[in-house]
Amino acid sequence: MQLDYEKLIFEVSQPGRTGYKLPDLDVEDVAVDSLFPKELLREEELDFPEVSEVDVIRHYTNLSNKNYGLDQGIYPLGSCTMKYNPKISEDMSALDGFVNIHPYQDEEDIQGSLRLLYELGESLAEVAGMDEMTLQPAAGAHGEYTGILLIKAYHKKRGDTKRDKIIIPDAAHGTNPATAAMAGYKIVEIKSNDHGMVDVDALRAAVGDDTAGLMLTNPNTVGLSDENVALIAQIVHDAGGLVYYDGANLNAIMGKARPGDMGFDVVHYNLHKTMSTPHGGGGPGAGPVGCKKFLTEFLPVPVVSKRDDDSYFLDYDRPYSIGKVKDFYGHFAILVRAYTYILSMGHDGLKRASEVSVLNTNYLQSILKEYYKLPLDRIAKHEFVLSGLKDKLSGVNTLDIAKRILDKGFHAPTIYFPLIINEALMIEAPESESKQSLDQFANAMIEIAKEAKEDPNILKEAPHNTPVRRPDETKAAKDTIVTYIPE
Ligand SMILES: *Cc1c(COP(=O)(O)O)cnc(C)c1O
Image 1 (tube, rainbow, N blue to C red):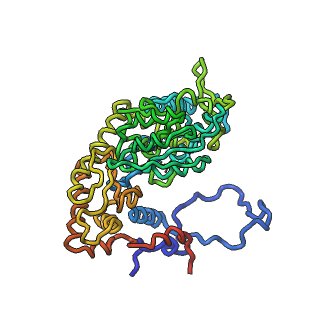
Image 2 (cartoon, helix red, strand yellow):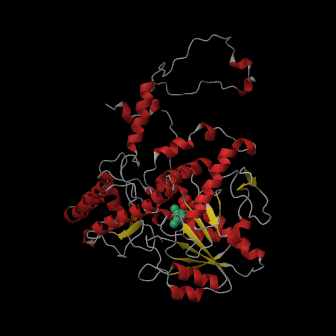
Image 3 (cartoon, rainbow, N blue to C red):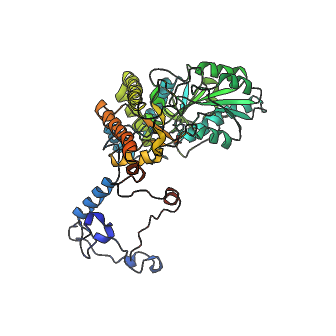
């Protein structure tokens, strides 16, 4: 017999069952059709499930159990920084005073919220070594686009219009070339050298009076911080270009090193990685952009500013602004979470978060490289990239490993990204994981490496105990059925 928790809520429904009770009506009962024109009224009742409170609770609890989340265990999804985010940040973003304000409200009424935006901008600028920030962009890629528009506006204002190329190393995040192309630039790719670093000689040969700028993902997508980061900035500056720092993964360096001090002109953050919102959550994010003084006149309007009397206002007076990049002021609730995170961590806490994320990642790397191929065997930053099993004879590939890890009770790492590593398995061990949790994950990965030798079919047919096994991934993405059609 099919049990209730295996059914849809519509199938659990019983005619007449309810989950609420209202007090008796003590006012005059008005017929709906006396309030609205008849043609706007529905002719048949909606087919809602009729269920009790306990039916509903069980329904949602069982649904949540089919999923795997950070509140259950480690989520080593490289490039996404799926760390545990403190509940206090959620609580703060849900405070009445934040939730119930309206974007059209007068400045005098929302001084507290403006102050929060202003102080968050100041803190983020301090952490990145920049002079001013915009909090408007809605995501990392959106921040990149905003940042590249700043660079474009700078060249345009100087009349330096032949600069039509952006240089991008091949270890950059995929959004970097997409951003540059969307902003109307041609892309010049620089290959990495054998150590996973930008090939400096190739960069020297590529720059010229047509270079608008360079975008550097640092740490890059193989988890390494470029050893020549200051030199790279220098080479591009000498050619008249500007340098953009993709700081999506700032939890590898925050409190330890600042893009501004490395010579970079523009940087974006992913608050929904580093600052208390998960990236893989599918919800809204925020990709604030910071820049050096000489670019601040181009920042999107409005910028939150402070008057001499300590009141805050929305400053639209920037004649060279690239314009708005987002309706209103960005994703405010995400900004509240980031502000809470920064205040509750403090300077030392942010620094310690970077230290522990780097330590955790290198700890896992040192264990797993005995069983899996590690193409770039160096000290990693916040993530590292394996290239399938060390022993390739079993015919087991990265997809099989990722599926099998689900059977062991974990979320899989990022797979087949970055593209420059064959059979990539990209693992990130964020700072919120304890040594015990890292050891449990490492043990599961070691078991898998052993199974591959002894019984590769277990891997090829994995996962064995998840609600869905191996869907056709293209069909699942392109042809999703999200509507329940009753019989
Ligand atoms: C995640 C990430 C991005 C893109 O961020 P989105 O918010 O997903 O647009 C850009 N660059 C790097 C290095 C990233 O890790």
